[in-house]
Amino acid sequence: MTTIVETKELTQRYGGTTALSSLSLQIPQGAVYGFIGPNGAGKTTTMRILTTLLLPSSGEAWVAGNSVVRDRAAVRRSVGFMPDFFGVYEAMKSWEYLDFFAASYDIPTARRPKLIDDLLALVDLSHKRDAEVMGLSRGMKQRLSLARTMLHDPALLILDEPASGLDPRARVELRELLKELRSMGKTIMISSHILTELAEMSTHIGIIERGHLLASGDVATIMRSLQPHRTFAVHLLSDLAEAADLARGAPHVLDVRLLPEGEPPQIEIDVDGDDHAAGELLARLVQGGAIVTHFAGQVNDLEDIFMRVTQGSAYGGTN
Image (cartoon, rainbow, N blue to C red):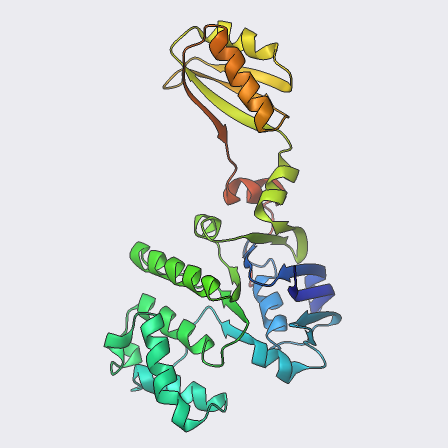
């Protein structure tokens, strides 16, 4: 798979403070890369370097094969950056806002009207074309800002906390828009503290704390590395102890726990085998007389991964 972002030993210091320490990561083309970390972890610093807004103290990074140190203009043509704040001029309409930035990207005047209309339609703001930007809701401003990042048709979108401050409906609308952008072939790097939001859209994740990258890769691989075995929850109408004894004698079973006080009563079984092993376990239970009403593997989410990987001691400060 083609890599669109790569960093190697990327380091950033502010005086005596190290914001990034030898960060090395890769983002494949077409991925939605969730960049996770507490405040002060180094997320925004990394994004500013990748968008050429900040030169690294040492190390190197490439976007679409272009160095963020030596080929800054080429990098900027490949990246659309949406910061975590929305800056506008007073008394500027939505279409004027996009036209202003289109001019900054040297987009020909004749092309701008259709381009602006198409982008407003993409982010569902056609009805707000002539509305003043300062009068838009927070969610609408975020969608307009996202449209701005698309003006020069970049291959990579870097979004810093795009869901911050949005109400639940606006978050859903933003999530659906990002899914549509990915279907259009865009690679998206997105930071957020709202881990459940990232879980629903990310194909890859990077977990950073105190400037150190603790884990990076596709979600399934990271989950398997953190929990090499799977845990199955089994709900029963029959005796729990008898079912537990049946399970303990099955191949690939590592541990069995009774949860008689649960609702419904159940057992948990740790299995280090594949789906075939899980199927054999279920067959063994049923053939042994267990009345099974539910048999399902428990799946870790991003919050589980984050809590397992991080030390939880890098809170506070700036990003």
